[in-house]
Length: 238
Ligand SMILES: Nc1ncnc2c1ncn2[C@@H]1O[C@H](COP(=O)(O)OP(=O)(O)OP(=O)(O)O)[C@@H](O)[C@H]1O
Ligand SMILES: [Mg+2]
Picture 1 (cartoon, rainbow, N blue to C red):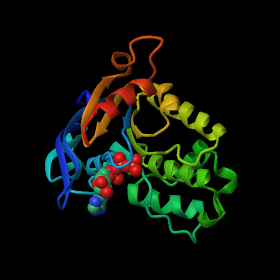
Picture 2: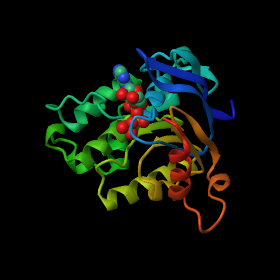
Picture 3: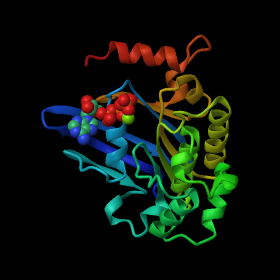
């Protein structure tokens, strides 16, 4: 298999005259955790949506396991996706939601209980999604992303709304996923948290400001991801 789980090549996305993403290129090496960072409106969600085929690039391309998503036989086995506004039918139970995701992914029946367990929602499986807290909804989204047993996870701000305990749980979960050979591309605004778990970072503001290993960005003990982030973002023209 290709060494890169995800490759973004010269991605440009315009909405009318507004340039959301311009000529963005980066790779996500297999087995790594890569953080996608940038201020509000920088183009993070647009990039992730383009990668998973939810929007068509104006130009450029995105490859998953070396192939366009549309050409993959069983996309759910390659990539699991969790992002905001990703249709929850509020009136149904968590289990039912996962059952629908499982059918869509063509995964075995037993996966529903497995992913409920993995995200710690077993006890709440029969509750309606509309009664869930923000953090529980995040966990359910992650469970749905996992149901096809994908090699790669693409997560748009999965830490949003999680309590400190949930954030620590998520960090450990992602670390374990990568240790087992999985790949993660995750957007977040929580720089200190992200710094503890990522191997590489891609910092964007429409264009790439930095893409590479965390250790090549944060080179001394007095530096932090946050300080380097502000250096780059504040130095970039809008
Ligand atoms: N469907 C759309 N139609 C028009 N403009 C859009 C659309 N989606 C995104 N945009 C614009 O594209 C730009 C990038 O938005 P995007 O949601 O990718 O940013 P983001 O980095 O995810 O921001 P945030 O941190 O707030 O989530 C913004 O200027 C936004 O207004
Ligand atoms: Mg976003």
